[in-house]
Length: 540
Image 1 (cartoon, rainbow, N blue to C red):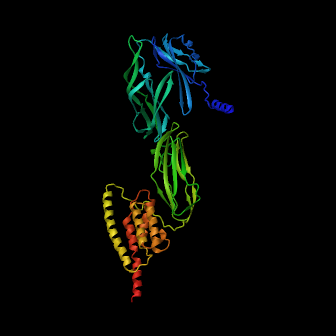
Image 2: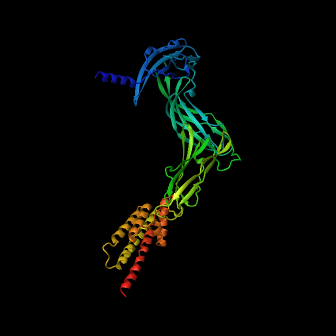
Image 3: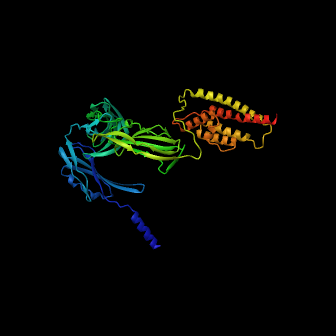
C-alpha cells in the first residue's frame, strides 16, 4: 500500500506541468499622453508571482506613481495550463517631450522599454495614432498578368463600433480579395493595437505605371474622454477616417522571347495522381488520372488548360477542371486540377507523352517549364470481348431545362406505345407454340425485360448493360457478351453503342429507352420464322 501511494505521488509529480517565467510584456493605454493626466501602464508576466516581484521605483524619476493593482489568473485548455500575473500602474509624467519607460526585470526576464510622447494640456492628440492603415506589396515592379499581393493592415487602438474597410482603387487592372480577414494584435511604441489584415490580388492588364490609390477606412470608434473637474472618464463615439498612401508599380510587357501561353509565377509545378499499385490494365476498364498544376503568387484564372494527347486505342473522358486560389504560409497559391478517365479499347503497350507547361520566372527573368515525364502502360484483353467505345462527344443530352417537360411527355407516350407493342409481340411469339415446355423461358424473359426497363427508368447505364447481357444469355441459352449481342442485329449494335456512350460521357446523358427496347423486341421476331418453318415441316 505504501509503495503504491509513493508510485502515485511520483507519477503526479512527473505529470505536473513545470511553470517558469519566460516573458514579461509592458504596454500603455495611450501614446501620446497629456502632461498632468494619468495613464495606465500594464505589465504582464506569464507565471504566478508575488506582488513584490515588480520594482516600480525606477519610474519615480520621470513619473508620479499612483495606485498599483495586482491580478492573477490561471487557465486550463485541453490539460494545457497557463498562469499570468498582471500589474496595473497609474502614472503621470512630470515633464513634456520624449520620456522613456525603462525595461522591467523580473527573475532575469526583461520587458521592452517604451518611448512615450508627452504633449501639453490643451493640445489635441493626433487621432490618427488611434486608427491608421499600413500596406505592403510584394514587388516594386511586375509583369502583365502577374499577381501583385496587396496586404492591408488596419490598426485600432480604440474600440470599434462600426466601420468599412474599402479596397484600393486601381485603373487598368483586375482586383479581388484573397482569403478571409485575419484578426490579431500587435504592440507599437508600447501600445497594444487590434490589427485587421486583408489581402488583395491585383493583376495589371497593360504595361506601364500602375497607380494604386490606397485602401481606406471609415467608421465610428469609442474614445475615452475625461470629465471636466472629475477623475472618471467616459467613452464617446467619434467618426474616424483614414487612408493608406498611394503606391506606384512599374508593369513590364511580355518578353518577346517567351513561347506558349503566358504564365508568370514565383514557381510552378505539375503533380499527378495515378493508380501506382496496378501494373496492368484491362480493355474497357477506366483508368483515373488526375493532373494538377500548382503555381505560387498567381491567380487561378491565369493558369492555362492542360492538354493530354493520347495514342490510338485509348479514349479520354475528362471531367470539368477545378480552379482555386488560397493562402498558405502567407503565400498566395493557385491550383488547376483535371481528372480524366482513360479507357483502353485495344490490348497493347501505350505511352502517355510528356506534359510540359511553360511559365516565366520574374526573379531570374527566364522561361522555365513544369513537366510530367512520359508514362508507359500495359493493357491486356478482358475476360469478355469488348467493342470499340464511342467518343465522349458522339452523343449528347439536351441540357436546356425548358425542354425537359416536353421530352418527358414524349418519352411517356412512346413508352405506352412500346408497352402495347411489346405485349402483342410477346403474345405473338408464343402463339406458334401451342404446347410450351415446362421450362420455357416465358417468366425469365419477362423478368429480364423488366430489369432492363427498371435500369432505363433509373438512368443507370451500367445496370442496363448488365441486364441486357443477362437477358440474352438466358434467352439464347449460352453466355453472351456485349460484343456478341451487338452482332445479332444492327439496331442492337447501335443501342449498345449508345449505352456505352452514356456510361463514359463527361456529361450526364438521358438514356434512349425506346431505341433499346425496339431493338430487343425486333430481334425476338427471328425465332418466329424458325418456328414457322419447323411447323411447316411437321405438317406438310
